[in-house]
Amino acid sequence: MSHNPVLDDPKYAYLVHKQPIFFRIWKSLFYYYCKFVFLWYTPVTIRGRENLPDSSAVFCSNHNSHMDVALLSTAAGKSFNHFGMLAAKDYWFDNTIKRISINFIMNLIPIARRTANNKDDFPFINTIALCKAFMELGKRNLVMFPEGSRGEAHVIKPFRKGAARFSTELNVPIVPVYINGAANCWPKGKIFMRPTRIQIDILDPMYPAEFVHLPEPVSAFTKELESRIRKAGNTTNG
Image (tube, rainbow, N blue to C red; front, side):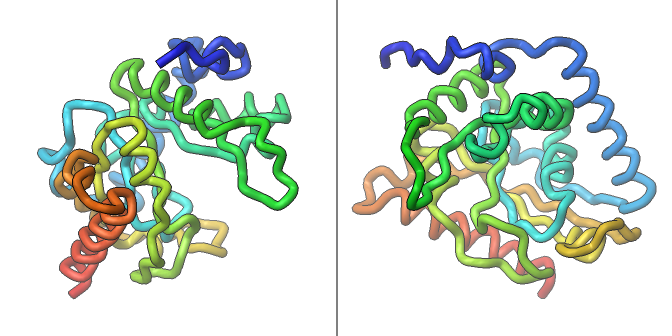
């Protein structure tokens, strides 16, 4: 693959190179703050850590709470320095203050939103190039929520194909995760957390190679991912 010029854009240097220590310290401090909360205020039980691959991966879970990213980071046992999330380029990256302020906590990777008025000034190949460079540095990971947005407790909405597509394009596994209890602790529409026990189940990783032989591999990958997370939810709540 030829070198993509987006990798030389100083705006995205924090994704391609080792970040300045100032930002790394802030991400680590926030990670340990979350671990403290998950130990004493909202006790978290983690099952299946032995399923974590020794490589970069796309972490996917059900999405019912503001705290899901922090829970996935804690489940993996890695600070926020090791995780990236996709974010709308026209909202987060065309404003210097937003771009820098959010980098205190999370590594955002730009992606163009599909709208009627969108001028495709940031092609998908740029997003993939940045994701690849980001993940290759220290086996870092992506977090994606296939439902697209937060839903109600114990309700899993139909999955979108984005996570499977990125996993396939990047040739990295998806780590399916089921989070139980976060919606009761900090649900959509609530400002403050309340003490609740949370259980996280890390499932077996899923590899793109398992689906490439199928007629519509991304669709099949997505369907199986949704099935596994729903099954974990039914087992936990059943």
